[in-house]
Amino acid sequence: MPIRPENLSRYPSDWPAISLSIKTRAAWRCECEGECGRASHTGRCPNVHGQAAYGTGSRVVLTTAHLNHQPEDCDPGNLRAMCQGCHLHYDLGHHRVTAAATRAAAIAAAGQLALVADDVLPPRTEPRRLPPPPPPREPTRARQPALLPAPRTRKRGSMARISIKVLPEHEDGSPCEHPTAPTGLPRDPASCSGRRGYRPHCSVCGAVGELQGIRSNADSAARSHREQHATAPVPATT
Image 1 (cartoon, rainbow, N blue to C red):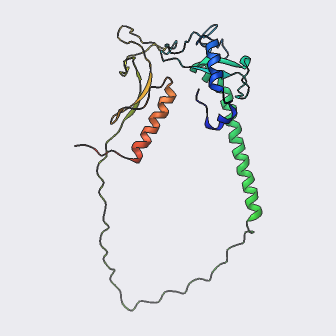
Image 2: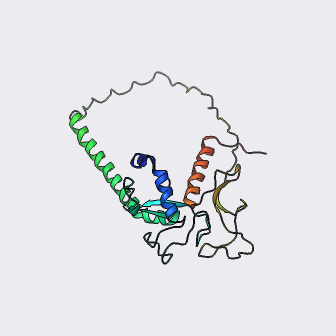
Image 3: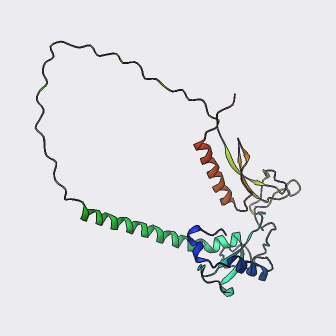
């Protein structure tokens, strides 16, 4: 799994070599035996690095997971080779706890700042009431209001309507629009060669970025591409 920038310092300098040794120990097959909690496989997970994942058909990416969620603890007994699906589900509960602690710390910090502000700012005072203004004088003659020119309006050129979709792709890179069964496998294997991964497709730019093995990563790339079009709109063609 990608390492978050704030956690880079917690990993040892030889982490790539350690991770490679764990994957070699596992013969490049997922070592999860149900720790992920998905209950979608009995015994050891059958996913093998680089092959199609069971249930979804997406390309398997083997990762190295810390069983105690502590990147500093790189003892072989604390490490497991896991496919991206098992790794995500295994870390799901830990991520929720970490997010809740982060929100609680932010709320506590905001409350502390409020107390400091009350101590530093001067005490509040009631606003002074000003005397009412004198009555207006009667005009000697009525004045005609000056006619102002109408404000100018800027005409903006029409912009292209952009559509960005995340589509699964076949092995040859073509988008897959075949219906799938609840297991994620194609209903008609004769017409569909299997899905290799996901990629954003823009109605203006075509296929965008690299192929992603996980749908959520492709959704993030689609949002980034949509923001690029928002900052630099594309004029409509006639």
